[in-house]
Amino acid sequence: MAVVPDLSRPAITSYSRQSRSTSLAAEEPSDADLVAAFNAGHAQAFSEIVQRHRARLTYVARRYAKNDHDVQDIVQEALFRAARNLHSFRNESSLSTWLHRLVINAGHDHMIRRQRSTYVSLDDEDKVNQDVNPLLAHDPTTHVERALVLREVVSRLPAAQRRALLLIDVAGLTIERAAQEMGVQPGTVKSRRARARKAIHQQLTAPE
Image (cartoon, rainbow, N blue to C red):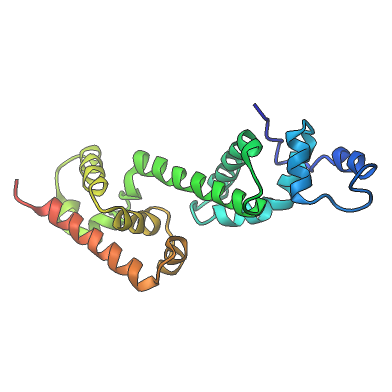
């Protein structure tokens, strides 16, 4: 299993010095060259890939996390996945695009973990509780029970509505950034989120 280098250290350059004595001469190795070198056993090539793409990957990861620690966790997880799966990269898209997708997937996984542990960050008088269901703020039910109920209700939402809700109310994205992430217009995101919140309100206030 490939090992991702420590991101706190500068990239190792011994691979590039060696390779330039052969086919790369004095030129900077391309992404394809680095991928081929890594797959051929030159572990240092991955350090150069990290150095080359880290800034962009960190920028993408910030869509899914609110603090630097979580951002770096997302990037690190994406890089572990890259190291494990780089042998399957076929240059059908650019390496940058492939790494971008890995960060998006790692970001989504981070959101799901966050949802499961502190569901929708609802305890600051509850982003969803206050806006969607004000009555719930006065319910004597414990936080754990509320979280379980909300999780069940949200899990039954249509996928597009659920994603809009999670991107905005869990990940903290603006409507515009959520729209960019989902590939739709801001108005579409707003309507999906509104429908999701209405459905939650109806479910939580329905008579038993």
